Amino acid sequence: MTSLSNALSAGFVAMCIASGFGSAQAASVEAGTLTCDLHDRVNLVVYSKNRFKCSFNPLGEGPEESYTAEIKNLGVDLEITNTEQVVWAVLAPSSDVEQGALAGRYGGVSASISAGAGLGAKALVGGLEDSFTLQPLSITGSTGVGAAVTLSGLTLTQSS
Image (cartoon, rainbow, N blue to C red; front, side):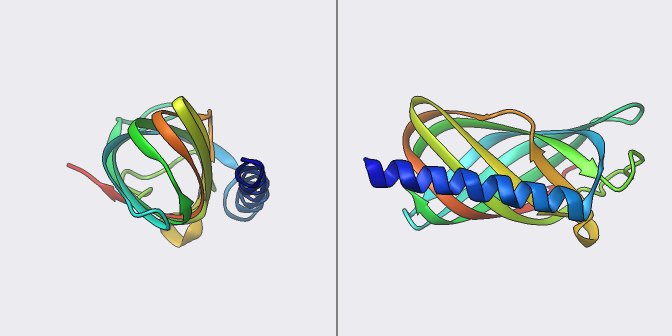
């Protein structure tokens, strides 16, 4: 169990470093929130793929936007989760984000642990010309069993 705790601690440290680096490099203004709910999950221990249904709620004016997301993880993923919700603050170069602009590829790190109720975080940078940062707004909520520390890639596609 100690090695698992050490791995999770290292994952959270890496995530904090990566999220701080991404924020300084890519974006500085909060443009809204992106909320994603787990739709489908495939876990093969060293590789996992999760599909989410997402909504972007811009700050100020502008309609809610729908997206689908696919997160692929490479690393140690021993989780069996039934539900998961991720909420990110969307940081952008300006608060005026065009509709559909979040679509694109993002990369970063993830760490989580669960035993019944679970917690975790995913910090990602990407989108149009790597100009957006998805900063964990709150701890990821999930139900299930296991732990994970992974490199994560997210593809966000606008839905109609």
